[in-house]
Amino acid sequence: MKNTTNAFCFLLFVMAVIFHSPASGQQKNDAQDSVYTGDLPLNTIPKGIVRTIKRDSNGNMWIASWSGVFKYDGKTFTNMTRGVSSARFFSVLEDRKGNFWFASVGSGIYYYNGKSFQNFTTKDGLASDRVTHIYEDTRGHIWFGTENGASIYDGNGFKNIKMSKATTLAQSDSVHSSAYQHTLPNDSWMHNDVNGIIEDKRGRYWIATRGYTTIYNGKTFITLANIDGKPFTNMRSIIKDKNGNIWLGGADGLWRYNGKTFTCLTRRFVGYIYEDKKGNIWTSSERADNTSTAIGNSVKGPAWALTRYDAKSLTDQILMTTEIVYKPMIFGIQEDDEGNIWFGDFDGVHRYDGTAIKDFK
Image 1 (cartoon, one colour):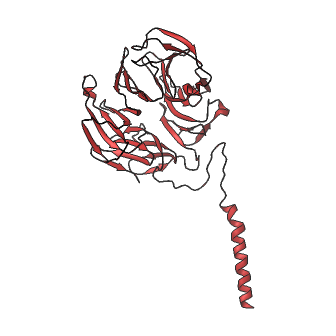
Image 2 (cartoon, helix red, strand yellow):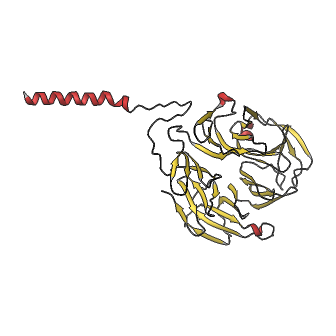
Image 3 (spheres, helix red, strand yellow):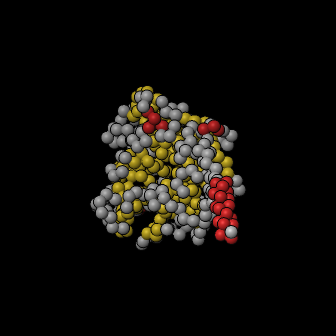
């Protein structure tokens, strides 16, 4: 009789566990707002794909990854989007007011004022919920590069711009060359899949896309062509350096525009461009065979490299470059307060101190 009673009690216990577990472990899984209510560790290390790294005004490093947005304070990584969203994050920006903007692939953008988050999607006027780039212009307006054009936020609402007609340069040595206008074909979605945005000295906006690279003056688009007379296509990164030069990097290589002419520094594919405090230009690119110095990981087969173009040699005919050989593929590059160079890849975040690469695992 005693064994029968024990068996019955054990059966009741098992049934209680079975019927209780789904309720206590239930998580919200809403594909529309991608809010995750599970228990992620607060302090952890970014894992998987890291797309963008930025340093804020206090020297903290912000990392946009597919496992969340992380802040590194010099000692600890903190998952800032823990409990907010399970979205894959692509880019991060601190605006002039100290607020943060996070771009995601599929869930729009997130605004963080240091205390709370606000999510903006197509329901709020955003051009697309797939956002890969964020830029603040001289007016304080925030630009978002999406797969469906650019969205501009002025603090009150969104204005969306999309290229359907463009003026193409007939000659290639200057953006002031003669030109003709044409209508883009129906399959022109690539010309509105935005990778990068920058404002030049004249207040015009250079927009790099998976298709053409254009200049937008507030009304019309001008398609840029290289010295071969071909439009720049699939440019992945665009920056303005301390001297006002515009740098373009992508499928057509690395190019610099000094206000008059374009100069090609390499024809290798370039995925990212960054200028450090000394004026050196860093790129992530396919590996070259004729660099002055090669250090880092030994890689068999096709490899990428973190390349530094020495600032003092940028005006010379012979460039001085240093190449840190690495495995494919390198994403966002950022210098910290100590002069170390951070970058991301498919497997997290890394830091180069001038001698060796530290992998955060």
